[in-house]
Image 1: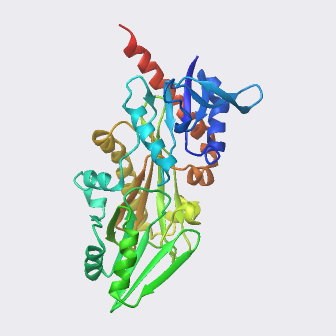
Image 2 (image 1 turned 180 degrees about the horizontal axis):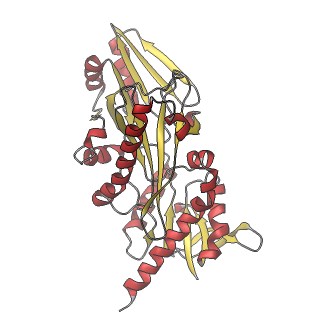
Image 3 (image 1 turned 60 degrees about the horizontal axis):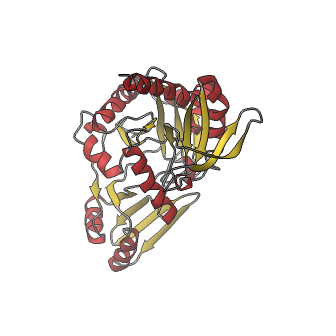
Amino acid sequence: MNAIGLISLNPAVENVYFTEIAKRSLEYGLVCYRFTPTNMNPFTHKISGEKFDHQRQVWADSEFPLPPILYDRCFYGDSPVSKASSAIMKWLKSREDLCFLGCGLPNKWELYEKLSSSPLAPYILRTFQANGPKEVLSYLKKQKNILLKPVSGSGGRGIVRITKEKEKISVSMEQQQLVKSSFSSEDRAVQWIGKLLSRDYLMQPFLPLIDQKDRPFDVRVFLQKDSNGAWVERGRGIRAGKPQGILSNLSAGAQTEDYQHWLKTLPPKDRHIVNEEIDDMTKKLPHLLEEMFPPLFELGIDIGIAKDRSIWILDVNSKPGHKVVLETNPDAKEILYAAPLEYAGLLSTKREREAKP
């Protein structure tokens, strides 16, 4: 029987998702394992992880060889373990004997460089690398209201809004709550921004993408490949942040809302145009990305819609969460959990055909 390995840095975070996939794995002829990258013995390449026990419906400790099909759900930070895990995953993805459901996307700057010169460039907000505090302040003087984003990261962590009004410079950050502060002098701002830029950051104009309740919001469109390898939309929903906040990420306390309900709040003449434009964009984007980068399995596309109805691709995530779809379209639950197994079956069949003389 073939095997699939589910990989994450923190099994507890993906516990429900991985367990629901594992419960269905026998139906697809797959033994299901889960592990973290650092669980692999560097000499034997054996893994100390867990195997799903279907009889007891629980995960059980197990030692096993590296499964030939792998599902990467790793999110990296700055810790030594995270950096080591990233290096191991990069090495695993270079091996021709292993098959990943999706190879993931590069960092936000590499993604921007490609998309900003693609047919979807009109939907991409002009973005620059933040190469130092002086450069950030020079850009701020021109724009008055800017956003700084980490080159690598997810969940809205590390995003900062900076505004300039006369001689006053203010910064806002949000995770579970909005934190604001201001600087009485440019020198103080330079010091603060200098510390922030110990990580690589990007800068772009701040867009007031707010709904009728003064909440930052975006449209999350969730795509996956089906059992034939074709891209299909599993669902779309609204992510709405806190009033007067800056983030619409769920990890920052945003909530999910029904897309169709939101669409009906638009004037009738705008509904069709906005919906059709999102449809067209989300059909083209996955194919464009796979022309630029290695193969993908799933995508979460975050789309901003301004009051003038201009539409922007805010972010593209190759390891999206499933909460928006599960909360706004509960009927999609079964297919979401089965999709990785269905696609793994397709990849397995392809590998067997290619291996035949």
